[in-house]
Image (cartoon, rainbow, N blue to C red; front, side, top):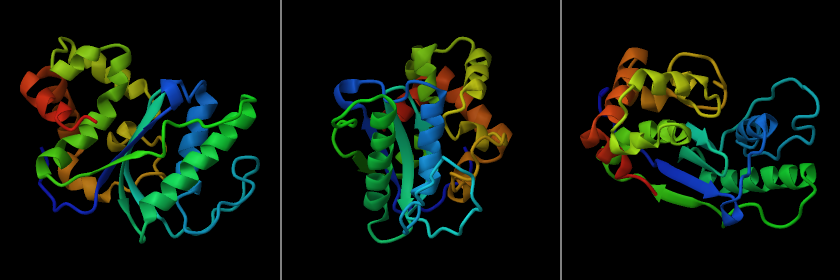
Length: 221
């Protein structure tokens, strides 16, 4: 692992689709949510053009720092810290409401999209903080290698190859592959994840070691 850093106000935030329904049905939905994470991360109201037309990039005063994220078909994981007073609540309200409006308009539905507001877990232990980024980034393995949760993957190279093809998380950006780099604030995790080779080596160890997998799952919601 990389060097330990002091905990800030880090929060593991999760939400699911109502009745565990899928909330990302196609590639455009994932892209829209990630785009919204950037646009709504501003103390000012979001511009009304959102995605419809490209405009010059305006300066933002961010509500939160997004340290890591992963979008799955019916839920998401975010690792956030506030950048303003009540920043997380304000950001999540804008993000959930904005995406709900987009989704309902696109798929001609009405009613709530999310299962409650959101769940927010304050990270208070170094042991949790050290493994949360790995846990978040490893979630897509549930699609093909759910045994990662027991540290029982026999072919870690295949699992890592799958993760390199999964665009809807911050994993690629921490590997040094520019995916959606403007969304995340990677500075605070640099001391934990180390360089690219250290980061990938630790992921390989987590999915191949029952002991390390148990540490990762100890933070599961």
